[in-house]
Amino acid sequence: MYTLKKSLGQHFLHDENMCRKIVDHITYTNGMLLLEVGPGGGALTKYLLQWTDINYKAIEIDEEKVIYLHKTYPVLKDKIIMQDILQADAPFSDTFSVVGNFPYNISSPILFKVLDWEPQVIEVIGMFQKEVALRVASGPGSKVYGILSVLMQAFYSVEYLFDVHENCFTPPPKVKSGVLRFTNLHNPHNINNKRKFIILVKAAFNQRRKTLRNALKSILPPGGLEGPLMDKRAEQLSVADFVTLYNSYGNV
Image 1 (spheres, rainbow, N blue to C red):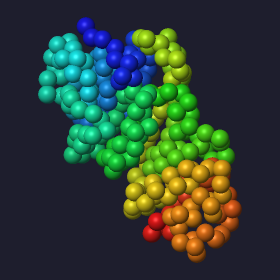
Image 2 (cartoon, one colour):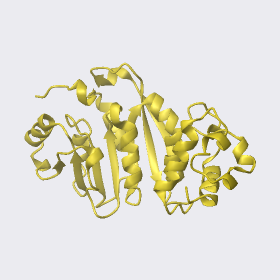
Image 3 (spheres, rainbow, N blue to C red):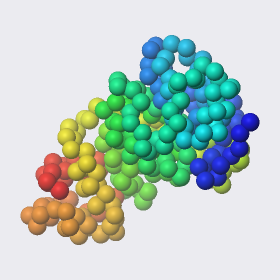
Image 4 (cartoon, one colour):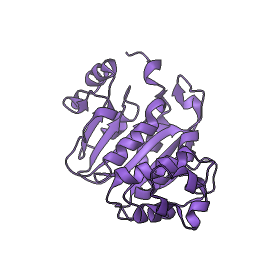
């Protein structure tokens, strides 16, 4: 068997109905490329392996879990990448989907990794702490609307699918969980420099109580601090508003 490692934020899903429910929400296609992030003890893996006509890979940092998975599912030989997801290169050269019960302590960095891989990642089905999931799916005007809300929604449609009760896990986490679906919109806003867009959005929200005129004065030229959007706070701007700012002042 294997042990749970608190240092890796491990809470393993044991509810079979919930495992099947998550897998059922993946947009399955014949021959698809699929990456499972953090397979752990294989709760989702055993259902994903029933799709024998897909190209499946998993990424797992915990050597003990990798050994367990190899012993339990011999078909996984050469399919598990033992590496930190945050340091990994894209596992496929073509477009692929991602699924995972993401470790909650690195779920936000995982989404930034998805943004790095965005040209290739066509869909993500991921479990998050419910608070984080609601934040990412929220819209302007919400108090929880923030950096990841804007960045993910600029490139993906974000859908909150369902809650996952604490008792579905071993050990039960002290927080509620939720599953999100991200569907790639193929850069509808034609953002050609993602890094600069991220800098702009982060700067706006890092001082979210201030108007954009004050929050962005360190990265925009004086002439860029005029206009009606500058009288608003970051949480009042839609994704399209942020794209307008980015297009106007793309030299940030």
